[in-house]
Length: 532
Ligand code: ADP
Ligand code: MG
Image 1 (tube, helix red, strand yellow):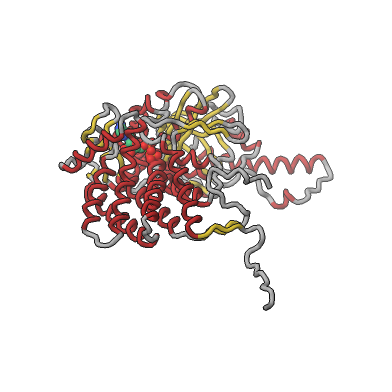
Image 2: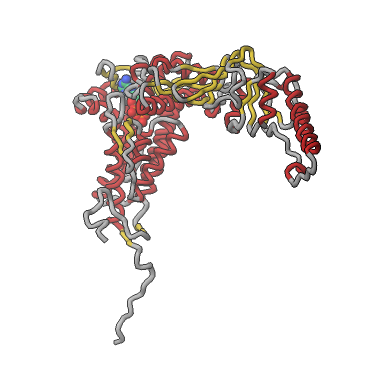
């Protein structure tokens, strides 16, 4: 018999993990990721200190930030980190919850795999459970009845974060900001600009009815402050763009040169006169402003800014109700915007311009203040969570009880639902329910309470019809959390359930991992890795 030739299909540097190994490897990675963020969950969660390769330090409690900063190597771990990002961009909060859910769904799936239940059965069960959970969520969510609920949502989002001590003040700013820029249920988050300023304390943070720009006027002879400012917004350069002038100019006598300069000056004078005559007192220009034009504007007491970012021009337009003009010939008085004050303030080495007191602005600025950069960054993350939650609640008009109450109630109803299912999917639906219970359990554990006791009490309460009971970590009591002001928007939970079940089922379906860099290590990396 002829000797068999080996057949090479995959390149040499491709490593392959197949079947059970691939599955277990991926599940392990997901569990580890969930474990990393777990201790940060809830108001009593701890913070993580992350140090990158250059020595930069981030102290945070925010799930997505942690996963973004940690260099993840494992493909399944990366998939999990990805859903945290989706949660952040779709809802703005609930990133720790979604990662923990995904990890727990996979951990529980492993139990079923151990019982020889096929992945496709688990996948089907998880799908059924996720759909049912969404229906239940819609059923038991309560409508947003007043602004106070929105404030409670913002406060719940910020509990336990860097901003905790001033969360009432910040919650007021957030709710006012969202209310100001919302038109009905539509909210464009780009309309709320966040500006961070080091110095002073968190309680000095404020909502500016207008914009704050990191800029100073083009010329030092311009006024530093203008009251009752008519504002002109232009997106073209206040310069001469004479094509002949840019080509070669041939002057043979001093008189010719004089004449040329005079004609340039005349054109610029004409241009600035149009601005001056429009009644504008402040000009924001997206492009450059010629020195001579600056001089003429300054002489007329006009404040002018050049090279303003396009995104800021749009915000200025929404804030001041001014129209962005694209040609010098189109400047009309009625297109000017308005602000009660435009003021340039120098602080330490930075110069900042405030455009304040706009009438019914459709773009506002949250000016955050704190003593150090690290605190400032964490306050910003907390405020973003609050903004995300409040705008979600405004969009959907529905909220749920926090402190693990909603998870407990969905879990209870899923268990009832499981009984109506024949077949082995039933077991998967039950595991889905127990993954949801991981949230209240961890909330209790992170607060140093006995999770077994808390869970027993919670289960009893829900069995006897107390659907809104969760663990209130202000007083460590199992009670109606909605009534206690621990409130979350329904969207956070909808998205968390959708994303976590999607990623879990996607990972369960994988039975073959081909990695072309030759590394398919579960974290932590095996020690032989990196030795080659
Ligand atoms: P995530 O990144 O998932 O938003 P958080 O650390 O912000 O994680 O924690 C959110 C969880 O904390 C939610 O389940 C919420 O109901 C709960 N929570 C917030 N405030 C309280 C409180 N005072 N008592 C109990 N649970 C709370
Ligand atoms: Mg949160």
